[in-house]
Image (cartoon, rainbow, N blue to C red; front, side, top):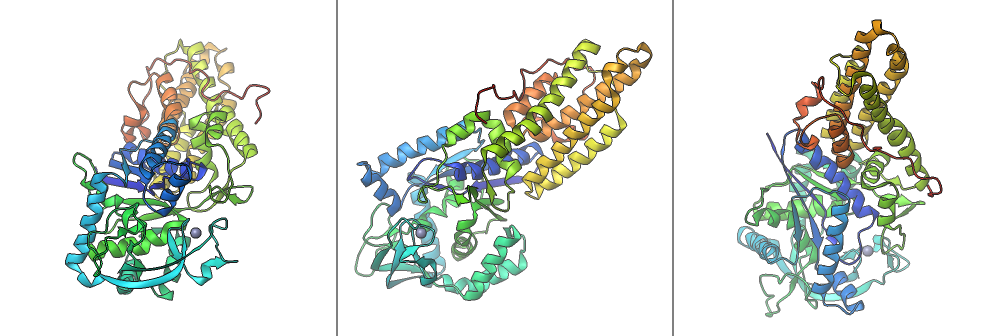
Length: 509
Ligand SMILES: [Zn+2]
């Protein structure tokens, strides 16, 4: 059994969860659930980034204290993750005392190990509160941050603690040369390599006139107590989370899942901080793309909105999870469309998997008194073996869409097998009872494999199918080896209550 500590980006506590947040959490959840299924000892961390000027401003605008705002927002995010079935083991909040103490300890480790890595410097530049970072000229268009065109840039002049990121240029070049898998996908890796070629500049590690943050552990030479710059506070959550008593994770993480807009922070600044503090680096960073609606990115600041709860309610949480992972490749951008959602739901869930399950179980009920006969179908055994093998390889390689496609391939094969074998015709001829056993037995074996393969992406529906197949316990806790040997003969089946009902007439889809 190997250890698998997986994290997602922590979300800014200044608004409600949107589709972009959901996409990242669902994707990481599918990976975490897959890893548990294949037998890894998984720890899955998500949480909230609750400090920074942006949060303080939002709280002030709403007449709340920053803590009251973040308490409210954290509860809304957690409620959404419950609806979506996110199976995290730990929810970290950067306002928690243990985290704040951890950040200070990490900074102290750097001071002790590499005292020259922090130095004081006066600085002036255009600061984007949306990004919580200073912007270079190239990132400013018409006087605004390219990522936050609705926000006004602030001209900031202050004396801060700086982190000597430039010292880690060679270290990072070597990291990317020695460990080509450190950052995926390839396109994101090329971006960081390009960034390294331009040369690294030192970064601010504290803010002066601003207090909603973790106190920077050492005052400046003129005695000013500053607060830790928000990225120096946020990134360490992956490490501070492991130091909470009783948690089951240990540093380093096997996988950081983040959005492609914060790759630089995770693949340049974070490794440099860890190296400076003498801590191990994470094994891998995965930068997923964005989901767009009509070509625009979902985000509060850009004003592109879709009610997440409406999107989930339309077909239910499991089909929503399926749609996100099936439609948007885990390595590039994708588009959300209601038309496509309805099309995939009808074709692949209602008419595909759902119809397959209900036909097979109804025939076992009708022709074999509800008991799965012993028997296999050669073509379906081959297709099943292939699907299971492909599925595992693709899921291990973080090709989540490809994993689902492997499972869907077996659904098609099984539906074809029904057409070819015409079990209803076999049932009419008593001499063909053995043949009918083979067909029904083979189809039920395929359904066992499908319940296992779909359980990371549609945990509730997969469990319904599992139970309908007469299998005891939880499909998610079944050893993955069962997918290679899907024995099911003798099980007593029941008919599931319509796994994927077609939308009622009149429901817009
Ligand atoms: Zn910005």
